Image 1 (cartoon, one colour):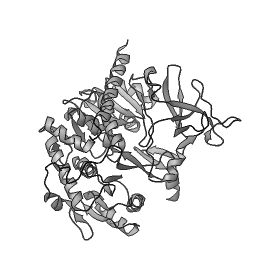
Image 2: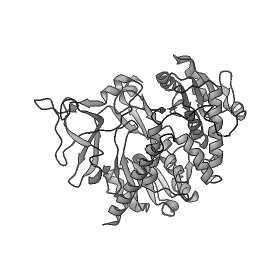
Image 3: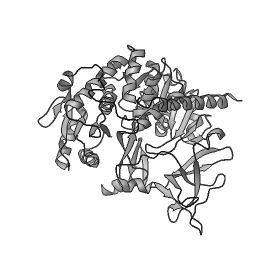
Image 4: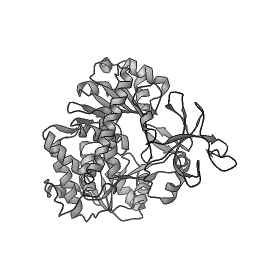
Amino acid sequence: MTSAAQFARQAWIRALQNVASIDRSPHLILPTLIGRLAQEHESRTALASLEDSLTYRQLERRCNQYARWGIAEGLEPGDCACLTMSNCAEYLAVWLGLTRIGAVVALAGAQLPSEGLARTINLVSPKLVIAGAGQAGALSLARERLTCRPASWTLGPPSADLASVGPALAAHSGEPLPESSRAPPPLDATALFMFTSGTSGPPKAAKVSHRRLMQWSLWFAGLLDTRPEDRMYDCLPLHHAVGGVVAPGATLLGGGTVIIRERFSASRFWRDIHDERCTLFQYIGELCRYLVNSPHDPAESEHALRIACGNGLRPDIWRDFQARFRIPRILEYYAATEGAFSLYNCEGEPGAIGRIPPYLRHQQPVEILRFDFDTGAPWRDAAGFCRRCEIDEVGEAVGQGRFEGYTDAESSARKILKNVFEAGDAWYRTGDLMRRNERGFYYFVDRVGDTYRWKGENVSTSEVQSV
């Protein structure tokens, strides 16, 4: 067995073992798991940003303060709170604390102008909105366009229409919240709303359950084999699933440290990686392209990285990226915030987005359907059924798995394709065109819908047109 195949097999086994533990502890959710991690790693740094750092114990106490503050503000299980905030250590403490008491936290983009922020808030009708210091101005302007009337708070200085969270938070204890005060929500309760175009149309609020948060964190902790000595470089938006859950969740579960930066900087990237002694970093493909096109940096090969993990690394720059920057392993994968399945390229096959090992194919049904480019939908025969693509034939990828959907039922229904191979079956539509080679590796080809990626964000062409 080659080293790549051996690494892949071990990664799959660790990930599967990790995720199997979820049903053995059905009352354990990520916010309460933070308390267990604090007992084990107490004074170790959990989150480090340029503005602030939190040890595991400090993170637990800050989460507990937000939980108590949320109860005092009248948040009941199922109520929504909206958060718009730049990347920093405090960001995770806010939503972990509020989801501990059963609230659903909607993670709005930190760069949204007031009109976009108002549209986002109106999608979820929150009971309260929290804005970072840099987002307070946009929230003040957005309030005029809201169809709901949430209480409005800022993590910065107070203003005429925004109260400051700081003084209110200081009045609450950081001690663990007793279940008699508020029991943790069940695994299948919704924890977050994350905004995504879903490859077509304007942004939608995707539901993310506590179970999904545990799955993402435990799965990637297994794939990456995260350890206490690991330091994850995270410069991706914390309001996204990858930057905000996968990267920090996997690292924290291993007892490591998450190095948070507000945004990606090509000129500062390798110096940061070197100075912060990072062993892991989470990428998106566009980030890698910027780095490959950047001038030589003496620090670009003087690092302790062992794995780069992410999605969207283009085949045409893969080898240059790995060779130039001396990346020992690249773990590319394919996933969507609301997706019913994911693919993982644990073997490091250049350009591939994943492969399903033979021993897991029965658990992860994924097919590529022949596509009708005239109708923009999977092709159907005279009997009305779809047909699987041949080797290397391009078609739309579909899968079966847990689909939690959007807050909008009509948008959710459009993601489900029925009567695919037989009457009554149902498959999740990715909206992505792929091909699969004879070795079982999947390759991304294009998107079916009307969105595209720009600087790590899904941009809807209908939104561009309206502007």
